[in-house]
Structures are given as structure tokens and as C-alpha cells.
Image 1: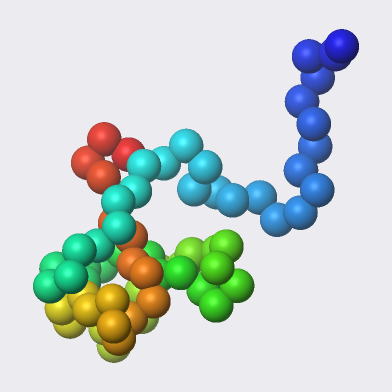
Image 2: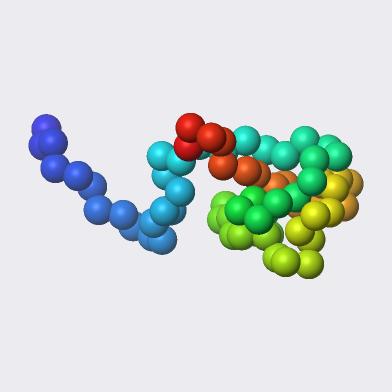
Length: 70
């Protein structure tokens, strides 16, 4: 068996190795938070329109925030 790395077969997630936590209901959405796309696989930075809104899982898709050690 070889120790060679297996090349990626699709888009590479640049966030691999970073640590995140999901926002809890009522938390204020901040710059640097990310939201889950409709494909349920990729994340992107939140839009400026939702900054300073309180996160509500009944309204918003899942949001995550980098952890201090991430």
C-alpha cells in the first residue's frame, strides 16, 4: 500500500481543519459567520443584510462561527 496522497476529485473545501460551532437561537449574527448553502454541503460568508440580526433556526438556514482555537 502506498503512502501517496489521493488527489481531490471535486472542489476542495478550504475550511478543512478549521473549527466551527453552530449558532444558537438568539445569538447575534456577526461578520465572519457562515451560512449553509441549499446544497447542504458548502458554506459561504453571511450577507451584509443579515449582520446584527438574531439567529432564529425557524427563519435562517444553519449558521456557523469559527471557534477561537480554530
